Image (tube, rainbow, N blue to C red):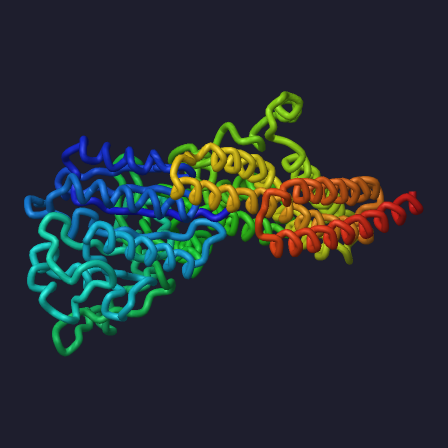
Amino acid sequence: MKLVECVPNFSEGRDMSVLDAIAAEIKGVRNVSLLDVDPGADTNRTVVTMVGEPEAVVEAAFLAIKKASELIDMSKHTGAHARMGATDVCPFIPVSDMTMDECVALSKKLGERVGKELGIPVYLYEYSASKPERQNLADVRAGEYEALPEKMTKAEWKPDFGPHAFNAKSGATVIGAREFLVAFNVNLNTRDMKKATEIANIIREKGAVKKDKDGKIIKDKDGNKVFEEGLFKQCKAVGWYIDSFHRAQISMNLTNYKVTPPHIVLEKIRELATKRGIVITGSELVGLIPKEAIIACGKYYLERLGETSGLPDRRIIETAVQSMGLAELAPFDIEKKIIEYSIEDSQRLTAMTLEGFCDELSTDSPAPGGGSVAALCSAMSAALSAMVANLTIGKKGYETNWKKAKSIATQAQEIKNNCLHAIDEDTAAFYAMMDAMKLPKKTEKEIAHRNEQIQLATKKAILVPFHTIELSLQAVQLAEQIAKIGNKNALSDAGVGALTAQTGAAAAYLNVKINLSGVIDKDFCTDILNKASNLKDKVEKLAKKVFNSIDKKL
């Protein structure tokens, strides 16, 4: 599922009525979750965090910026934090299934709309920057709000979007895309802050101050301290003493966890600490973390143990929490600490019990229906392949197949997760069609908009089960592979996996076909039907092959 985080900073931290009004705009947008509103009275600034589907987040960000432009007057603003606009900065951050390029595109879409509709000058920064000199936020914001009247007279300060003119009330806004920042602390068994600082200086990108053989600090010709290059890029670190925990910590901001993952830094700190007689007692995650990041941590430790990482996500996360000591200072609640889980709808179908799902399925409600059941069948198929693979790994007599079985288990878990997501996505697509049909149709403009939305929603209702057929093919292919090399005592489970994939594909095909009559674009219909039919036939052929092979062996 595509998820993006957006963290707009507003130049208001004292008037809660203003902040409540901005928050209300975000809460009113569907498929967006408002995670946090963090006001600061001294800085007179508030950091707002939201997460959701890309287009929905862009809409929520625009409405929030619009409301801020109505309620915040920069000509009267004072505060300790650097600022240049009512909405000072608004970055987009990829969370899951999002590329940085996609986030850049979102930032430009928002920037263009803010400039055009609100008349606010917009500058792009970080990955979205149109010029190298605009990448750094501090450079763009130099001189702050007070410098804008003069900046707006200079050609080099022409905004990327919006008028090249001073907006006295709203100032200017900086919009862009950046990586997710992980705030991560490592706990030491000492109160000595100097020891924590020493290690922090070694690991941080900036490095430690250079000293000569006599221990004297080395300076350049201008009298500035010279630093040695640190061990980790995208890592900022300091050592400090936490009085409430009676220990020293190494506190870090990992500004790109894909470049410097928390578990890799932790292991290096353990190594450096051991040489100094220090023990790492645990670690602490401040704020939230994307699931992808902590899954990578768990897989790292499972691989070190020589165990399979083809496990459910929560089991992998549990390994990460235990291995890194993330629950040492406080319980680690994955429902609150991991972004994807923190925004999950508790009413989603996949959160139901089997009994509850079947009961809901049996009522006169049109959804969930066959599309969700199709996705469930494919999810169970992948789960069975993972099961057979995990029953093969570590078993005597199958040593030559362990590596392949580990790969199958990992792939199967990913397919299973995608199928589970499709269960709720199919139902959501149906209700989106219903919502489109309820749109007003009194004027020609309303009719045209309603028809357009119905077509978009109907295509979505077709593409979801079509994707399920694609996933079913992947699932049956894994069933075939594990049936050949897997634990013979679980052969029947591999066969059931093939059959449930076949059912999932056939069921999804029917759901593709039933909605085609509602689509005007006949080229789309012909193309998707041919593709769906071919995929369904491939799944059926392979499933029968697997079944017959297993039936013969049994």
